[in-house]
Amino acid sequence: MTTSVDDGAAGRPALGDAAAREMKQRLEDERRRRASQLGVLEQSVGQTSVEQTEASDYARMENLRESLTEIGSALQRLEEGTYGRCEGCAQPIPAGRLEILPYVRFCVKCQGKKNRSAR
Ligand SMILES: [Zn+2]
Image (tube, rainbow, N blue to C red):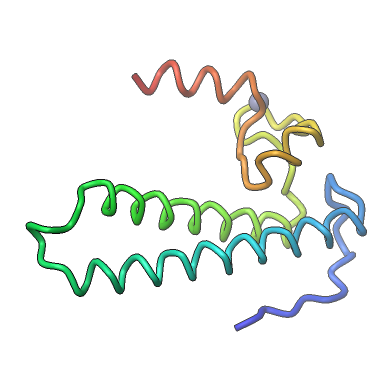
């Protein structure tokens, strides 16, 4: 199920080639791990009646699905060469932040703004 774009060095991404490759690897690992967590959870919830299923299980499944979506779009951005740029202000997101949150879409400032307006 891989979309193998091995030599996609055409458009220069914000990230260097090696760094982008490494990040792709990381995101794919992360995606695999979460997909299998979600699979396990879905199976156990599937075997449990609705009344007995913990609300927290649903919340966890929801979380996993969300992060899978985020990881998927981060991988897409990686291929398109837009990865690592804030979707709010188009500035590069600091490498340290990407290190901790590889599929983050916003820089700290824009994330803060977004969080404030979300509540
Ligand atoms: Zn920003």
